[in-house]
Image (cartoon, rainbow, N blue to C red; front, side):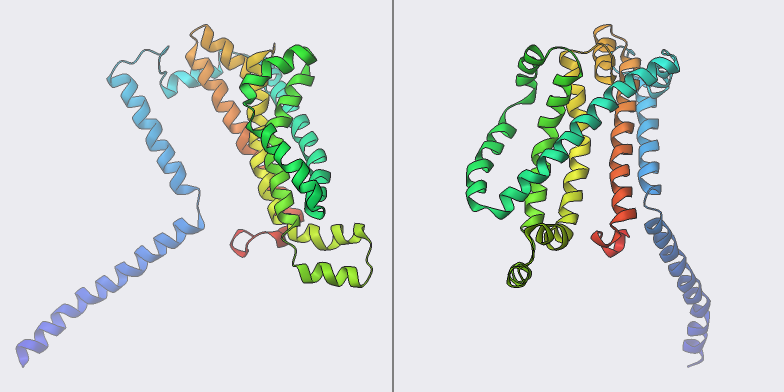
Length: 284
């Protein structure tokens, strides 16, 4: 009996120590959940370290795969004014095509959601337009519209247009039918039905399409610059690659990715500031 009591008493500190360790591990997990950017940053830093070590260990030439340190040197190959010129050229075309896609998508989505006849007539055409490879049709657009900003804006519009139409139409049709019947029984104008009933239900879907399309708009601007341009990040990457200046090309790619992420976060910030009710409770 004394031996059992001694054994239990001896195990008590160990049990208390284990109980103290468990909450500490729990607190660490909670902190990591509250800081969702910590783990991706750690993973990204580890990948960069492996990339740097691998290129030095296997003596990979910089014109095949430059190390991250060489890519940092590629940023210094151009002065700031030329970087600003290329970034602004791509950003301007992306925003113009994106704005045109929003302005044209909304009335089409309203027509598709309200009229089954319009949906049957227009939706197959939209699918056909989306099925056309933009890379194949881009030279034709350049020949028709010239080498200015207009063809690149059209290419950007064509890439970012379809997700907006689909998301807007889906959102407008997600309105409960009893609300639509109630508004019609009260003889509410069609304008109020769209703005005050359908649009609030469509807002989460609309912002989902806006977030997808803003990244596609950057892709469209770059595709247009690959075909015909004298400035822009796409032109800079293509020119640097043709001259085997891979560190500069990778530096341009890093700037392009940063631009897409910033634009995506800008759309998310607009939704969070002006339409917080359209977000899930965990994202508010």
